Image (cartoon, rainbow, N blue to C red):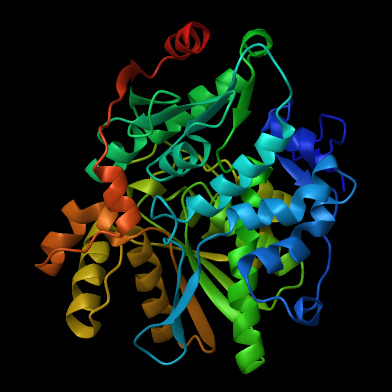
Length: 431
């Protein structure tokens, strides 16, 4: 399998080359030249995430030096579950993706990427720098996955004041090899700075860089796996497709679901839930695609005004009319997020983080419109990460999962930085 840029300006690359580069040199994102096709029966006998991952990802690794290590990579990465649980309401489910070390779905992709990078990293004089922009959860997952990895350092950029206090604590708690920079700006500013660094050829000759954002194939491909497992479990039990509502900001998790469906997994409709950042909602409602400055919301990890993975979405469906027929987007404001968290707990005892609440609200609207079949809301983070939002709405505390409690008990530090590329470049060169 070879990988090409969404912008078509570079020669095809191997999987290892694409993962190591992060972003193509023409500014595009790497995508497979073609997609394999599966049937549900191709996974007969495969139950665990690691088993399904090994089979599902084998065609994507074919012909690459990493192929012989795929089974071991999957075993290292998929060590915690993705639970599919029933919600109140017939045929309503929640896919809990927050049982990893940092209590967010980003743990799956970050651990898989780390397992790949440890096998790809060449001997070099300078350490490899994993440069990552985060709107809340990505940075902690990457820090946990790469902490203390030999010959690797991590530099996390996050928008100062726009992540929850517990998210911010996690970002700075992984020790000397993981640095956190709180940027005076938005997530889009952080993402812009990271992209400038990857496009700086002179810098990269002096500072080896790799990406751990959702632009990385090493994060995107493994995120297909939990959708595959959930859909296969439902198919085996009910012989029908499972539909998904995916909360999304930078579109990586959503594109992974779409890729899994395009590969033949028994996935039905995919509906995306966003917050008040309306770039995607407006496009799917018929407007031109117009990136804009992000605005701060309760669902901060989705505060993205220029989602990077939109390029991959258009690669999957180049015609706008077809793209709008394939998927739909619902936008949920802060008042509706608060109401959903409060009402679902009062009525059913369910507790959701603000991001998951956008998807729950969207599913409620779909049911009111007559949507049928089985639907799974994707729960992207544990509600305890957002105690300052969730607990006042519930009128009670939310228990900390043990792994999150351990991270919050560690000391944490971060450094301020202007939203200025010269400042980032200087830090990369001086570190």
